[in-house]
Length: 204
Image 1 (cartoon, helix red, strand yellow):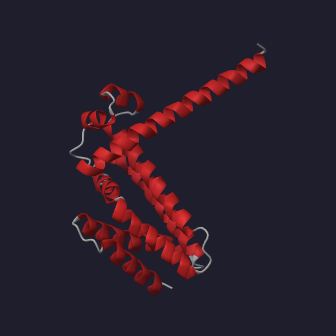
Image 2: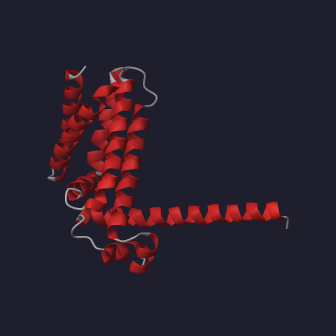
Image 3: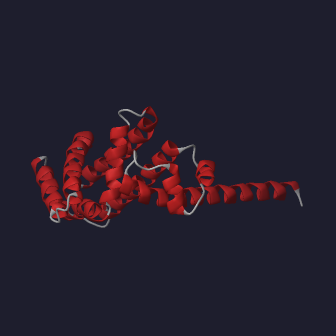
């Protein structure tokens, strides 16, 4: 085999191994999210996650540098998915009213169907006040969420320099109505939509 072909094969094999590693980490993270979203950070250990995923603790520590690394990866993964959901909701709509309806609907869907996952985000964000290791991923996620809100404002034709402030307002509403949903309030998604629309109207 020619040297160039050998190099290409080595590169191809390396890409394959890298993809397999990412796929395995994502699979483990999906099981970990299930455990963490139910029990919370403090009450979930690597053994709980290993049991739920059908893997050994050794397998988890092979792919992740301990519990904090695994949790940070999990939170980053599902928050990236959430941002994509909001971006998809924004796409394909022309009028501001349609964009607002789609985006507030996506937020409402999130607390109706993924409340426990989002609860984990607020858990980890609070933990970052005490656990320095969580701070980089929390900053990264919040930067991505603020950027998402800036894109939202841009679609509405509004100044994007209000992105951070608008994010804090929407995030506060989301957290309050998420709490209500977790406490069994079936009207929480609908109430969230109404509250978000009121805030957006007041800032027009």
